[in-house]
Length: 165
Image (cartoon, rainbow, N blue to C red; front, side, top):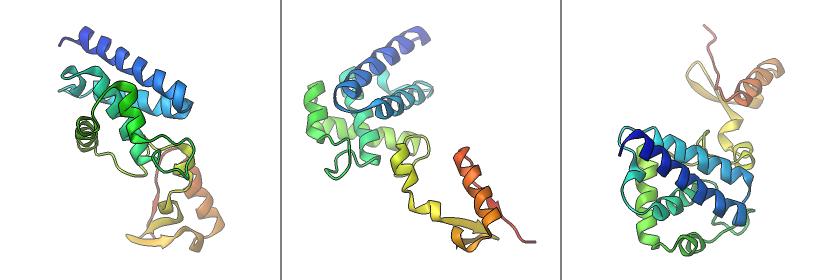
């Protein structure tokens, strides 16, 4: 595929994920899925250039959903994995294989800064800790000024580590 064809496939994939997210999820999932598709489109070997685009759309949504507890009834929004597969007329086993490929390719896991919903990012248990001289400490053990510095840095998407020497 040339760059123009890749861009067209990317736009089609974003259209499919947007449609699902508009109907069944919310704007934040729509944005996260779009970001994931664009990241995949920047890879040297663009994965969605092979296979059915519907499978990739289901895999993108499934990937974002799986790290944000979309399949847990106690979270809102909630969607069953089979609902995603049915919507795109895909087999779950095929979709989960693509999900594994996406997660491995982009090293995506729980609390990934780029693909986690704002609600889940706020509940990240690692937010309670900070590194001081290479040792993990509770953020609450630091002075209020240092706590404020850490929270401001994290709000900008940065992390901060302290050294006392």
